[in-house]
Length: 305
Image (cartoon, rainbow, N blue to C red; front, side, top):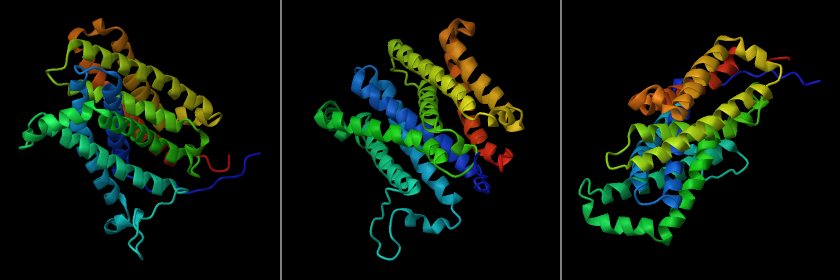
């Protein structure tokens, strides 16, 4: 028989909901852009640039959101620096410490990519570095950078889900699928945003390939969503009959996964508006899902089961 688990849910508000969503959006679009660089061609890179313009500002916003959510925002630097010695502090056994350093590294990588596309496109007086930036991303150094970017992006995209699974909070700790679920959701929302903000110079072929990638991400996310419900066992009944669970099924499941996937598979359903509608619905569903996952721990009566 399971031991009784009684624990107070964390006092996480909207700052954390937006952090989970925007962080996933940044990481998902960034690692997809890195994969485009590694296996795509030069025409596909126009879509990768969308992510490079997007990821760094989103990471900066995420940092602000996390600081605002702290009980003592002015002490945010204690996550990475020892207050007594001012030396860097890394606790490999602490998910919070690993996450803080990963987000810092991710911010550095996205900043480099951000400055690189600014230089390539000749913005803010950086055009004189355009040729250098273009050559660097094509050479061995560029390949090594994209491999690192893809790996860190993968980690950051799945980290929040893994953090929930490794907590002692009932519902979150009842499944080990939150990590891969958040990873695939990040890929789905990230590619959806890239499609919405696509550059005019992106070719129809590149757009079709990214739409196919989005469809695959949605299909896999739908399977993991079903797997999550199954993994909860008896708790699944309580979840889907609660207000949060109904919202999860209708908004995240139907509106954010099933309908967009149908529009990707059969774009003739809405004609030229299918891609835009699918992308918008994916983003709505992705945001809703993160709210529902965080809210479920507070709304479900799981103590003593």
